[in-house]
Length: 194
Image (tube, rainbow, N blue to C red; front, side, top):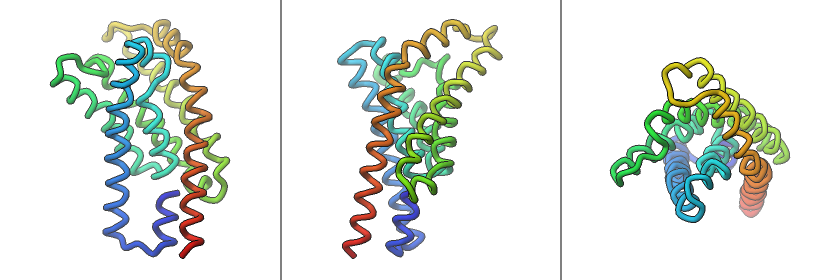
């Protein structure tokens, strides 16, 4: 969607890279800050329930497309882990980090697949987000099932966390498309003003 807007404005290749890098960095920063705010306000259970890191990754997928969103999906938990490790308590925990990287990469990739459709009709953002959520959570659960002998959590534990996070997923399944539809309308209006 963002690519289409930049192309229609005849932005040079270098400037496209600069804009996408800036948006990606902003989304990664948001993915680091949002969980901290949720944990401050609601404690660790708030993170499991509201899944704040997912929001910027889903926005990135819908907005930037698969390739750029993958960087947001992979780097968000990594950057969060390194920054919070320096502060004394890593978030996500080291044992959970590879699973979250895989899950958020799937969130980004799947939602990113719909970028061109979203550019044509913003309602596709709803399909993009729900599809990404289902695929990402399934990958997390599947990886835990495969590696459960190596990690301190089980598929039953992760399934319980998925159920706990249902309301967070539901809120994001509504909020992210509304944000994307709003951004799309803003981009289209700016194109019309030129």
